[in-house]
Structures are given as structure tokens and as C-alpha cells.
Image (tube, rainbow, N blue to C red; front, side):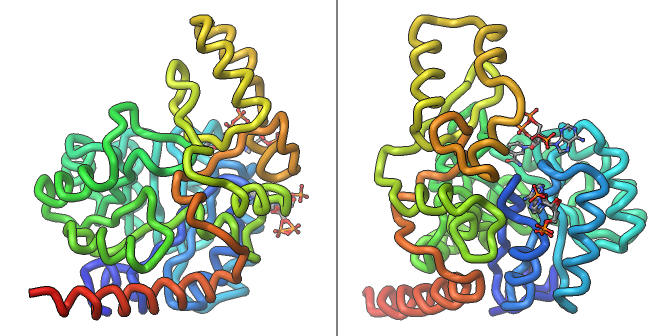
Length: 314
Ligand code: NDP
Ligand code: NDP
């Protein structure tokens, strides 16, 4: 399939595996890239030496292009950027911050830069900053989320109309049917997170993967809006946050309750009660833990079948 996104990354399928903290290390990223998509190492949870190790292992595991997702609020971001440049990474997805800060530096080194946005305004700012494409991520997405709560169905056409650069749709996409819908809205590729978090090559804890499989409609909610909005699976920790929010706890109390390293505790170490479990609404449609190549294969099959079914409409 040829779109501006497949051409930009020289990939076979317009499917990008989202960079997810504690879930997407080199094993997942290289498996996706080997199978014809674009794999991303999620650097937000990695100390600089760990990131270097993952990039090197990824290079050894695939001859295909792969990238690194860098949340711009990461504390040691200068070190991460330097490692990315030194190791010759060809693609960087930036998120959670201002795309003006690092885009020029990365592009001067010939790196393709994509920024993740949750509104048309941020998409236009990203285009002005010189990025090659944007990921437009809707409210359905897991983890950190836009404050305006615009859903993928509304966000994609708005962003597509607002910018000239290609748009990658994200938030609520785990199947080929959803991919076709996103492309009908004007996206030229899709970024898929939750589906890959529950794949064999994901570095997430097995208990977290099983919890994703068990999730049903309504089991994820946007939480901690007073701090940084984040979509979480319900668990004991989530209930404690809800209870605190219901009695209008201030930011300081919420921050204290959140503490440090909650995401690691839940997603990487497998504490299903006290950990922060970041996953998208689409977890309700995830019922198994396939390999990453199987995810890509299924999505493309579903996409083609859905396209065929629609072609019969008059
Ligand atoms: P990996 O190559 O998958 O992991 C190597 C190291 O990475 C380990 O120290 C591991 O921590 C840590 N690690 C693994 N996955 C993550 C992750 N998603 N986020 C943060 N740290 C992670 O096989 P190994 O078991 O040899 O792990 C290699 C290193 O990469 C590990 O240090 C691992 O922690 C790190 N890594 C980091 C990831 C991340 O997102 N930050 C993801 C995958 C690996 P540990 O020793 O506690 O298992
Ligand atoms: P916390 O402040 O609660 O904890 C920091 C975590 O990051 C710890 O588990 C720590 O590992 C690990 N870490 C890796 N590198 C560093 C470093 N240089 N300095 C300090 N800690 C480091 O943060 P969160 O767990 O909520 O978020 C971690 C990162 O992930 C942040 O950079 C955040 O921006 C990013 N993030 C990105 C999201 C996205 O959607 N892209 C979603 C959520 C978070 P250890 O416990 O081993 O010390």
C-alpha cells in the first residue's frame, strides 16, 4: 500500500507501533519493523544507558527502519537526543512538549521527525516547527491524553484539513476495520498502541497483558486531570484516585497519592492493585496475546475485507 506515510518511512504497511513506556523495548520495535510496519522504542521509561542498549539491540535484530519515541518532558532529554544522534536512529517521534525545541536539531542530522498532537492547533504549530508528519491522537488513547478530550472520529478530519503534511491517526485503533475508518477520515497511516502492549514481544508484565485481555467496555477512564490527564484501567489505585478527586483533593494531595514510579510498578512489575495501568479504550476489543507479526497480518486482512465489503455500497 502506498501513502505518503509508507513512503516517508519506506515501510510496507502504514502501521506504526506506538512508543509506550514499559511496553515497547527493542524486542517489540524490531519485531514490528521486521514484519513491515514501523516499530518505535518507547524511551520515556528508559535511563540513557538503557536506551542506548535498546537501540543497539534493535539495530542488531532488524535491518529495517525503526524509530524512538521521546516524551519531551523526560528529565534527561539532552542525553536521549545525543544517544539517538550518535547511534544513527533514522526516525524520532516526539510527544508531550513543544516541537520547536528539538525538531531543527534532529532534522539537521537527517532524522525524520514526527510529533504527537491532540488538537488541530498543535498540529499547525508542529507543521510550522518543520516536522515531517503528525500523529493525531484522540481521547480513546491510553496513557497521557489531551486536555480537550477530542475523540479520534472528530480529531482526524479536523487535523487533516488543518495541515498539509501527512497525518497518522491514533487512539482507539487495534483492528483493520478501525484502520480503514481512520483512512476514510483522511489519515495516511495509523499508530497502534494497546494492541501491541498485549503482544508476545511487549516488555509489559504478563499480569498486565492478561488484565488488558480481560478489560471490558468502560474499564478504562481518564484520570488525574488536575495533574496530567492519563487514561488508566480501573484498579485499587484508580479507585483511591477517584475517591480523592470526589472530595476535591488538591493537586498536592493527588501528587502525593500518585508518588513515583507507579507505571513501572503496574505495567512492568505486575502489581495490578497499586500500579498505574495505562491502556486505551480499545482494550475492550482485545481478547488474546498474539505475536507482533500476527497483529500486522490480521490488521491488513481485516482492512482488505472491510474495504471489499464497503465497495459493494451504492
Ligand atoms: P531487554 O533487552 O528487554 O531489557 C534490558 C534492560 O531493559 C533491563 O534492565 C530491563 O529491566 C530494561 N527494560 C526492559 N524493558 C524495559 C522498558 N520497556 N522500559 C524500561 N526498561 C526496560 O532484555 P533484558 O531483560 O536484558 O532488558 C534489557 C534492558 O532494557 C533492561 O535493563 C530493561 O530494564 C530495559 N528495558 C527498558 C524498557 C523501557 O521501556 N524502559 C523496555 C524494555 C527493556 P529489568 O532488568 O528490570 O528487567
Ligand atoms: P515517575 O516520575 O512516576 O517515575 C519515573 C519513572 O521513569 C521511574 O519508574 C524510573 O525508573 C523511570 N526513569 C527512566 N529514566 C529516568 C530518569 N532519567 N530519571 C528519572 N526516572 C527515570 O514518571 P512516570 O512513570 O509517570 O513516567 C515516566 C516517563 O514516561 C516520563 O518521562 C513521562 O514523560 C513518560 N510518559 C510518557 C507517556 C506517553 O504517553 N508517551 C505516558 C506516561 C509517561 P526507576 O523506577 O527504575 O527509577
